Image (cartoon, rainbow, N blue to C red):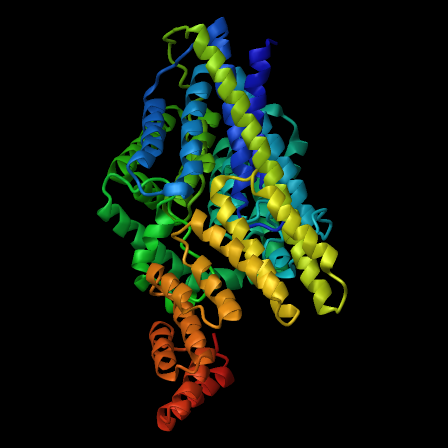
Amino acid sequence: MRQEERLLHLGSLLVLLGLPLACSTRLADAVEVPKSAVYLAGGLTLAFAWVWGAARGSWPWFRPNPLTAWWVALYGWWASSSLWGQGGLAGHVPTTEHLVSLLVLLAWTATGTPDRWRLWWGMILAAGLVVTIYAWMQRLGLDPMLWSHPEISRIRTISTMGNSNYLALYMVAWLALSLPSIFASGRSWLWIPWLMTWMALVQTGTRGAWIGCLVSLIAAVVILRNREVLGVALAMALGFLLVVSSGADLLRERAQVESLANKDVTARVYLWKAAFAILLAHPLGAGPGAFTPLALEYRMWEPVELRPLQRLPENPHSQLLSVGADCGWPGIILLLGGLVTFLRGRLAGCRQSSTELALLLAGLGLSAHLLTLNLALPTEAMWLAALSWPGQFCPAARMRPARVVVWLTGLVWLGGCWLAGGWIVGESRVWWADEARLQGFAALQQNQDARLLLTTAVRRYREALPLVQAQRRPEIEALQGLLYLELSQRVGGNRELDQEAMHALQRAEALDPGNPYYPDNQGLVARRLNGSGEAQHRRAIRLDPYNPAFWAHLGDDQRQRKLFEQAAESYRQSLQLYPDHSATLAIYGEVLNELGRRTEGEAALRRAQELRSSGKDR
């Protein structure tokens, strides 16, 4: 095997096998950074192998086909939207991912053959088995990753991807794709790990899980045209009953999601409305990373019970609307064109090939999940393209690049892999800093000496800063600031620690001036340093006037300075946005009493007490 062939397989391994494993990390949700780093390293390795092999005549330079044209146009337009969009700093990494996705499309299309794709599907099968083993280790209490937060461990018991929907999304593809391989191998024992994966997927209790189960069940029934299908179907039914009977929470979760009053549902509706409004305001796209700052303009649509949370709108949670917000109507047209081309190609061949049928079903499941329910990174959207190439190998248009192109590609590849490696190292520093910070504050609660742990946390945050992706640096600076602030509060006030907190939060704001939480937290620190942080709180309100917490913080600042008339107005603004927040109601009542408006004040205090007594305190 030639070197370029080995590199080709290594890049495919990183993309196909490495993605789910990169996500089984601790102390994070979707852990996008290591996932992005692994994808970038794999994609650049693929691109370098493709160019190298094409230059040596190992494979064609291009294999044009309609599907590849659609996806290349989509990712090209998506990346280009950063030139006129408003994504700013937050858009740099998505733009890079879209460009790498374009290269991966071209590389796989040019080099893919039935033999190579069989090998790459073997990588997918191996990844699914490893994910299954790890999922069951978590389920049985044998998780080698020690979780610092019990509630996170409970929520993600069965998830190896930080977020169970990401695991389910991966399994939607894996279950259906593995069926033809298992059936063709003739090894009946392979059904055991397949069923274990299916049961693990059921236990995630996610929308993607139900889609994956339905897709895999249909594929099994259609592909297996003999008695084996009865045994597999029976085992699936028994497994499902076992899972449901041992976890009633699954049924309660399904019933809860059916309610339109569910917080998750109402939050998604707000995100979808905001994304559509951005699409209408920016028909050619606002650029990668632009959704978060632009969605703040539509915060009046967000449910009031969600506004006080320390979070910003991250993404529309719909692939269609995400593409629309980023790259406008042209992006939506290109995405839908690629999906239609994919489905037409698979329908034409599924009657003759069980593999084609599995590809079609996996693509349908992924399409339903991505377009209507969830946002996935470009790496997940790539499945729709990756699943479509077998059987579409067109005659080659051979063309050899100039030698300088090969050398330049090699330099870009080395630089990209070096950068990706740095991201992974940087993120590991952040995770260990988080761990030291949490352990340090736990030690303080037990009256133990936590100086070493907290000093370690600060040092690791600082070590991580030059290594992580640019869009992560403001968050890490803010984490340092909050660490200093909380430590100062716990020791009864320390001016030096407060000053360090202020400097860190100011650096965070300088890197990401559109994030309103950085000036709001500065206001809390300024109140301790200078007696007032009103200017900082008002700066946060200008960025996000629909967040009741910011108005309440401004009221706290004014109340501390005995500006009761102004404080009462600030609390009133907060309660207009969030009427049933008992803590704000109680303070508002006390301020009204200070102003001599006792009838209103007592009414507010009674309402606060009623909310607490009824359990509706939020």
